[in-house]
Length: 59
Image: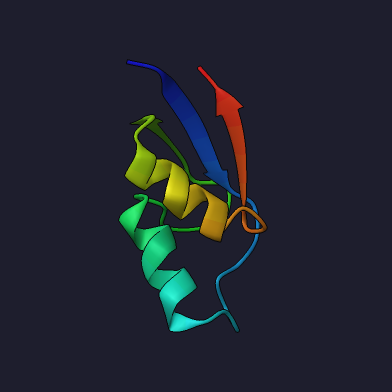
């Protein structure tokens, strides 16, 4: 299964509660924290919702 590397590049301060929960659901904790996740439809949906706060690259 394909994997992507997600890095949080912006703060979640002053963001909606929904965006904060989405960032936490992706496994991100703070700025410059990086996680590798499998590409699934649910993960890609979360990525699209917070794409202005994260950086994505293929692994």
